[in-house]
Image (tube, rainbow, N blue to C red):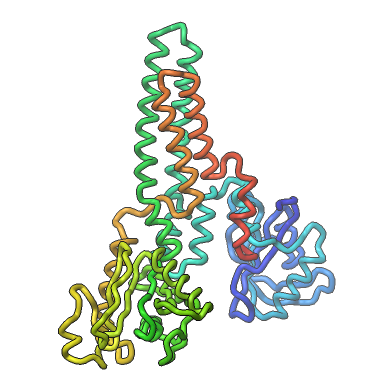
Length: 441
């Protein structure tokens, strides 16, 4: 992607906005400021300037200009920033002036961040944290992403890698001095001690990987139950909008409807599923099959039944389930008295009992995703590479008496950690990581 051209892009919100920020990075970033403003600002000091089209000398706008010379910049290259009024015509005029300059082009998605990676300003775990920070919907997601951006996993992985390289050097010394039994035994024992300590630390990080990944993606709560129990009305009540179609006729919901919520600061995806029953309608039958599958895969099931129905159907056998007796405003005293233990009585129409259900749901989410200790692992890629390192260390410990295999397994573990941070062998995944970034970041 990087071809030594100087790149530029809008790094602020879509116009029109009060202030637009245009970033320029590359070897000619300083030349662009000189051409547009007539002089180069002091490094890292904002300068008021009239932005002129170098070709016509026409004033485009009055703005603030900043210059960050390499390597002390976000990308590691010379970087210029122009803060101007955010009208479409203003931005278009500035872009037209930059496009006419030799050696300039519009940045591609994520290219500023990719150049920061290539110049050693960020490792891959920090970049993944930056992407998660941009797309964070809840406060808990924001905190987790910011910790990754600040090096929570990257710094730890780099420390592990350095210790592994030292252990590998000791193991290879044992091979080189195999004719000196005392030396070989001593260095191999030291390397084995390092391997055991690292295997324990990485295994501990992996033990909490599911929580970090789940927080990033959101907890899945499926609303399931028989037809006409009020599942769609309950979803709309929780979502506080008409997200799902409500009808008095059974079988209205055919496909799974998803609603994303911020519940007590944590991300939750709420699913409204088709009523579970036997049917000859092929479309509804497919909807029921999908409902069963999503309920089985969900982190929690809200099994909704009609409180006025004495013959309440049995809930599915899943790990986490709340029985919700809906329509208590229409139920008789007899059916209310025969409520199953541990269930919640609510009225999706009036909202009665909903606060107690939401409080318990929030407590469940907090218990599942919350912790005093931040999760190190937040993505599948990270988990897979840490597992590779852990497996290599396990094999190394088992083969400690065979110095050549022991040293090779240590090398493989160090290589997996290098791929985690992007130090080695990552060209095949760079495009995947940066494809979801926006232009200007």
